[in-house]
Length: 428
Image (cartoon, rainbow, N blue to C red):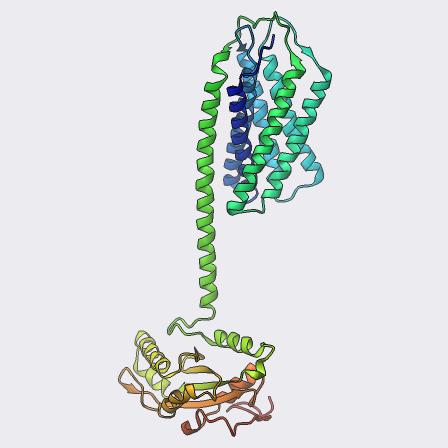
């Protein structure tokens, strides 16, 4: 009764299978991250698209083997075969979309999906309701079931494997996997067609409700359009997820930066200074790269705070920080250490490049004004490794006030083992 394959319909069946497989893979991997109502929407849509795609591929594949008699199908059995494919797809996606899955659950998902495919295929063939019963080739029947189980297991395993992948690499691997899955789906179908054949003189039942010309290229076109819409949705979803991930990454970087940045001046804060000091001290050759700390404290900050409101005080602090920054060498790391104090980390402090900076710092007292007030300073300095080899010791040493004329001169500096600041016990 079978004549020859319609190559255009064979190609159409494979294209439908590829689109269905790709959509199933994407929706399956998407389920892992979805929760609540969003997960139900992805699951329902994925089951409908995957089930309908496999079901369409089956009937397009049946039309690829033309029969001498006009082809028609029983409406109820055809609808049930579609439902079997959708339900099986839903059960499999629901299980495989979980964050954790046991071997038993994976086996259950594989059997559910392969069972639905087998039921859909053979029920769809019986839906032709011919005048004579089909002959069954047991070997090909068993082979088709084995192919269905193996293909379903491979598809679900790929879904699990792809859950941790994102971006263009994931989409490329998904497409390659879809090509393999589609070949397996078509292999099962065409093996099943050989396993169940009707006698050459058999004719369709007169009360079959679906005519064959509607279950072929028109059905394939309709399903392809549906799957293409689904693919557009997946592309938009991927883009939205990338934008969301980028936004989250930007926010995370902003929060991280703000943890180390003073909000008023934009300079590194105390935490930023501490991190910079630790980075310098942790270098394997740290002792070969000495640096100095200059502590610049606004001595009349309380006077400014009493005279100005909150916003005016912030503007004054910003003005002071800009003036200090303008005095320093470009390579100097400046941080706002407290509300009234700044700390400058000077690399290679003995370098002649800093001579102009030190000259200005020795004359800095009352050379800077803010809000009409001349700023007075308390200045100190320390140098690594001479006065200390830890960030705590270096900062404590720099906080001790010195005569401004000493700034930039490090030859006579030495470590003080009993260093203590006002209000502290010596040796603490």
